[in-house]
Length: 535
Image 1 (tube, one colour):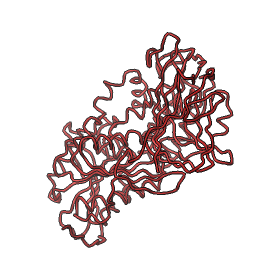
Image 2 (cartoon, helix red, strand yellow; image 1 turned 180 degrees about the vertical axis):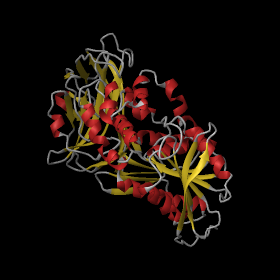
Image 3 (cartoon, one colour; image 1 turned 120 degrees about the vertical axis):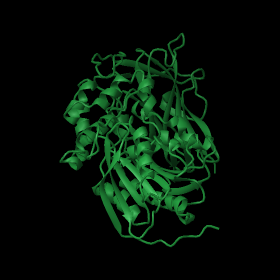
Image 4 (cartoon, helix red, strand yellow; image 1 turned 90 degrees about the horizontal axis):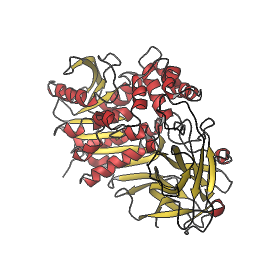
């Protein structure tokens, strides 16, 4: 029988700037937060490129030390006093393992370890978790994934806004006005993206200087495998033996790949926990929820007190219903895929499509189709009314009938489209919206697929079957509401515009408009595939 320990709030002592040696001679700095009166309590390791003081020290250091854990908050190389240069993602495996070896040599280390943190801080956990050893008991990851490649090259395109925001942020955060630089990063990024300059010049416009990581992202877009080999830990997710809890948001940039990490662990026989709320990436509400989740998780797996851990491992907030639900797994029980076919007259229905001519739109990269709402690294990504976007001639809009009863869709979403284009290089953007009785049309999820010669292959008639993965959803379409689907050629500046030429991502200048056709007939049953939940 597990006994519940009394919850004592501790005073906290702090050791600043502890030197942690790396095998290559570089020294990283760490701060240690320790609860007064606790004898070698469990250690929580947090590795961050964003600093150790201020908000980070309060949220990850002092908050957990007050609850009886000691916290080691370390700055990744190249920032906030740590030596070396920040080469994002590539050093976190070796540096993290060297930090664990250093921890084990400290007289205050008690032999029991956890790791915690969101976003890049979560990635640093995945970089070492499969190799950490048996003293790693628990991990708390949030709005993150074991690899960032697919988020950068989403659907084979390029996540311009988020990638440029992050490089702009890291260029300024360690300076004298770091906090202000972080706040200004989205504005600087958007101003640079809307300048019309080639992508390879945007880091200087946004960050004030060339950023090697941004240039690497551009250079390795066409063939990312070699570059990302040392930066991708998705293949070893199932080998993690520590207890893992994940917190994500429906509007987070990393959600699809965080969910994939969950399913990979389940396939390996693990039992991770997953929480998805109505949050975006830098949402303060998500940060508070993730810290509360981590505290309960660490008390259960490091202190033997499971009283704060829920019984069922999956907890989802169902948007449109305003309700939290607990489930035994993801995908949730009772979910089945339902095809809603694009129909003549811009209709949308589960019925098989009728005979009809294809719908057409022109995507002009010199005047790229914009985006309203949707996942981005910094900034509010909550749903927005898309009627202004739907009025554009370069956006096809398909609308279903009013629902006669509340209908819930919880799970993965995809599109299966039959497309023909005047150019071999074009993007297909698909978005699902919830149309309210007032006529307001709020985005629920979206996805993109970049087309290139032979990918996907075209038939003799030039028609290509295009599969598009959208963000997963947990949404109730209320009675009287309707489903709406957008098909377009861009989502700028969220996604870099497709120039239509196949020129290199960073240096391309020539622009060719794409005249696109979307087919919806019995031989070409284009559809959005939605996760209908019965009952």
